[in-house]
Image (cartoon, chains in turn cyan, yellow):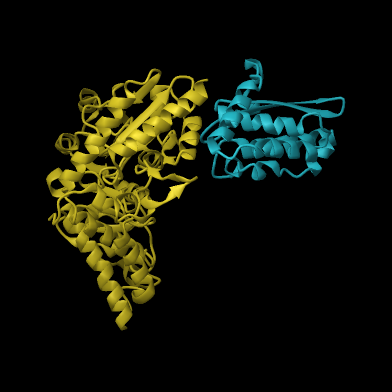
Length: 138
Length: 409
């Protein structure tokens, strides 16, 4: 499935929720199902400090595909991380760099990626792309 | 001064922002510690000013300029009278509390010498920490911190031990923005004065809750923000005792603050304009005057009693929640209920409350050293104004229960 298709899948999934709380319950459930990052991976260089919540991002390149794993101290942030990982994992660095991230806006979660939200997510997306770029140029 | 008995429902009618819905839910605004909503009269004043009275002040010979100047100076007098200052010269218009503190740090701070000490407390907002750290770096002074108890009360014995003839300034919050603690400032001021120290009160969280009388408090400086007291953003007040302000050098140079400029030597304007360089926030000042006039029409004692009742009511209910910890349990506190919940991040709770129409603050509230003291990343903070109600607290409590269920399940 392409990055485009994976994003569309998430949008379709969210279409059934017209209540905000249901939407967030889903994100929270997702956040709980995202595997916790091993303590030894929660290093300072993997930490993206936000004013509200912190995010840790670990990256690997396996057989030419990016493998992200990430964690957060806030469960809603972690749920959204889960969605981002779904979209970007198992994709090549080039595909990630060329892609446009549109599902967050479409499912009404744009506020979480706004620079004023300060939860580390916007920086995390930027770092995912930076690390993809590094893998590409290595 | 109060002309009508205190009625929450009547007051709510005056605040258009409180009537709106967010995400289809009636807005419950519990983020008054961050900023307050504005009554219609303040909005009308701003509209009227920009529509019909707009002109630059203090130098125009024309009609509009004179109108604007007299409205600006009338606002200063309104504020002077409201806080009990001796003269309008003691009222400096600033950008806000932070600006007022920085003004004192730069101007009053000029007289400090290496070895001098500035005393603050462990519950200060970053705005009442960082300007002093910068001053200490410039002047080689030392910053001392009065510790607090777990309940969120100042350690008064430690305070007395920290006071010495080296203490040149005590800069302390009147009411903690994170804990709601009302500090015993009169006692602190008296004791600080005994060693010859001056006292600055951070009034950002007290002006909207308590009737302030700077003469009675006998503080040397009192500073607050307009936007937290039902006025516009970008405007604030620094009160200072006249003889003290008079003895201080200008903070910023520019228009309005000068008497005569030559390339060889410039002489400065007298108070209060000496500290108001450049075109000030005229609309903001007039708007703040209008907000303060609005307060004068309210029985502030009754309003304070209502706010205290809201605080106790909310705290009483939240106290019964398992896994919930109230942060800040001072005997004398008001209008702030900060809490944490075991295994739940404040950000998650705040996000879910938001989606239920409830505005609270989450995070460290610009008091990171205080968060370090409690060893928590942040709190959820509900902060009340006199327009809030017990019914709103009931809805908030139900929404919090639902949020905790979702997060804990």
